[in-house]
Amino acid sequence: MNEVTKIHLGRTAFPISADAHRELRNYLDAIKKHVSDESVVGEIELRMAELLSERGVSGDKVVLPADVDFLKEQLGDPKDFADEDVPEAADEKPTDTPKRLFRDTDDAMLAGVASGLASYFGLEVVLIRILFIATAFMSGTGILIYILLWLLVPEAKTPSDRLQMAGKPVTIDSLKEVVERADVKGAAARANKSLAGPVNTAFKAILQIIGVGLVVLGLALLLSLFAGGAYTFLRSGAVVQDGIFPVGLKEHLVVYLAAGVGVIVSLFIVLFGMALFQRKWPIRPWITGILVGLLFAGLAAGGALAADVVPQVRNRYNSHIHTVSYSVQPFTKVNLDNASGNIQYQWSPTYSVSVRYWDNPNTSTVKTHVSGSVLYIDTQQLDHSLENGCQGSCIPINYEPVITISSPQTPTAVYPGLPDAPALPSPTPPSPFKG
Amino acid sequence: MNKNTEDASPLAQSEVQMRKGMLVYCVLLLLKDGKVYTSEIIRALHDAELIVVEGTLYPLLSRLAKDGLLAYEWQESEQGPPRKYYWLTDPGQTLLLDLKKTYHKLHASVTTLEKELKK
Image 1 (cartoon, rainbow over the protein chains, first blue to last red):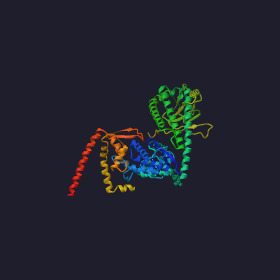
Image 2 (image 1 turned 60 degrees about the vertical axis):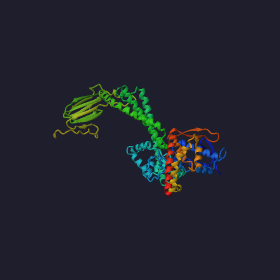
Image 3 (image 1 turned 120 degrees about the vertical axis):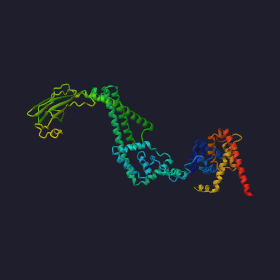
Image 4 (image 1 turned 30 degrees about the vertical axis):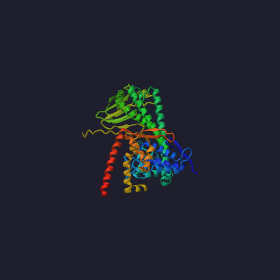
């Protein structure tokens, strides 16, 4: 039983038997390897059509292998088609063809980077994969290198790419070998790798789990960005405490740029997760390019603006900070029963208590007194009504006063009723005796 | 592989080189009087036993056309596929004349050499 298909030579369609078709296809492909000019190939096809008609093969007559043999005899060996003036790399005896780095997508776990590297260096793929995974834990170095190689290294698409990847000379014979082997390659590769099989399966499973995790993470980030963004927008756009940040167009721009960068980064996390799962980059290269471009543009613009804006924001923040110092009698103990806030200790030649607070206009609310060489600090009358200045999702300013106790020697803490109370942080004063 | 070793024999190689050297001249000669289409060129060269297989001719014609020595146009034919007609351009004509001189000179030299050896 011989099937009949069709082949187009020039503009004429010929019915052709399956085996003759295969033979003719191979012959034409071999010729194409020698003829760089596409129009010349067209001419050769026309000539084939002409020769066939002259031979009486026309209309409904089926082209048979004998007819193809006749064409070969008339037209000659594929290498006769090579132009003598053009040096033909394939004709030379290549003793050592340099290997080229390709991504081997035939044997890929993800994008074929590891298997391509394995071909290039002549190592086991599993080794390279383990190396990638190991370095992935070194703050993501492996992942970064993988993505870079994915973007930079071309995929081995044609048989000649595959030969170059393996460092084999690209000749008609070797090409034929690759093409013929290609039919059973997947099966053969799977059969050959009985040992690597379970490892591969494990890799795939791990990659898919990580992929799902990344997709979930990315989507969560996106969602929170959108939710946070919408909320902040409704609240007239304050990120940190009303009136602190952002103020003015520039600072708002910084916020929007940061949000945009966040969205793109989250998108990439989702995309990378999908890529791990389906082992193929899910979107078209040009869209990826646009996203990367936007990311870098956003980072650059945001960075430049932020550098401009940060000092202003810091000044604005500092302008709300007030510090009041109280000189006190000498003390050796401290009682903080009625004190809340951030208590610090500092060495100083004199005894004093300084209260640093944010935006609290009432300066006399922190009471200090010394009695029986015990320092009492009382913040109970501190106005806490301002603590709710940040309503909603913005980052609140810390209204807790910072109380700094200064003395020339370490006081001991007194916490009546709290036997195991923690001691004050030990000071590291420069010893006055040494100086 | 077998063909390569065959072709590598000194006789075959010299013969191939000799034919190839003549081929450009002969093609130009065929086109001297006007437009000729590819298959006719092939048939003429084949009949004159200048080529054995057609393959060699396609790259040659395409290169000559690319170098501006030949011009061509496609014409529909009543029977079969369209035909590509070639003719000589002005530089082609000049080259033909030059090659003609070269060929005759060569021919004369070879003849002289052959006669000298006969003595």
